[in-house]
Length: 317
Image (cartoon, rainbow, N blue to C red; front, side, top):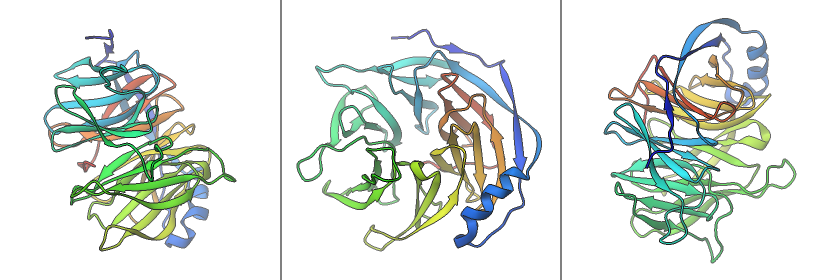
């Protein structure tokens, strides 16, 4: 089934890249990062529009076999991009249930895992489009609004579960679904709208966007998989840190929703580059392509998917 999506391989958006040599200690990163953005210099890069006609695109997920999946949060369909063609992979339907409203997604062991914020659940979707509930409740209550998710090296699933976008009402949480028995653990709470989530390349730290505070948090991963030593990795004023991804050099790519940019953050918290995006509301990003050096970006002001070549290969969640 095709939603008549347009693939535009020739339309290129000229993007500003802002360079910064800012370097700081981790406890000073938030204060120094804001100043470095203002003092940056501009040069040029290019985004290429791949698909348009979307409806609040989010959650791009590369399957490792030539296909990219992504959500249309308020459109009722999941898109699959493969072999230069964008098509409808799955439609929302209540019976038999497929999904309600998906957001962040990732592919693991050949299955598409999706945050369904309409259903308050995590879904596991087969390549044929058959859906099963992977995690649907904690202590008898449905999750609030599952937003984004990532697997650790042992196959345990971590996901963010925001509720209220507020700096006063801190009801956001982070959960883990254990790979061996599907036990669900709440690992963190009292967060201000936790959003994008990703593991460091070595798997020793977990990064989570806390959108209401315009910052990215960093946790150490304990031997039992729990979270410890929460700290602010970086603050990015003027928008919401949304989806995130790492390249193999340890640089963190951050979609800055409302700020019209993708930030590239070095492992020490210094801003290496700021890439202006085609619209002001980039939501998420993912590395893909045969060499994992194609950076895909979903953007909701233009309701489109973009791509560009990255300097280094990325890592998959």
